[in-house]
Amino acid sequence: MDIRLEGKPSGGRYVATVDGHEAEMTFSRSSPQLIIVDHTGVPDALRGRGVGQALAAHAIEAARAGGWKIIPLCPFMRAQVERHPEWRDVIS
Image 1: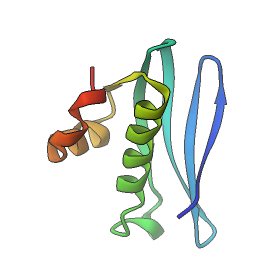
Image 2: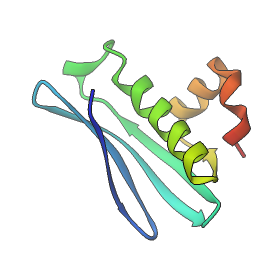
Image 3: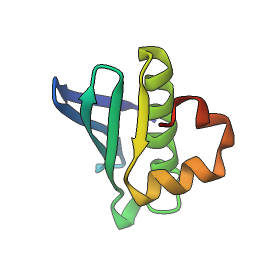
Image 4: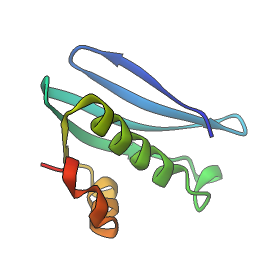
């Protein structure tokens, strides 16, 4: 699955396109070291296919690579963090 970043200095979104449908995880940048994940949207056609999980994992890897932390405001992202204790190194 290809996930791309659409960003600007104040925030952005990770976007996955699968079978012509687009899913997203949006975030705002609170500081150079902190982002707030505030929304995950997966269309019905893609539900149950792991697209939201892939977006969450991508955000975690991006945070590790970029040296920043994530505040998981989005309920979906919060639930994923609870399921993946190995992600807590980048959760604020």
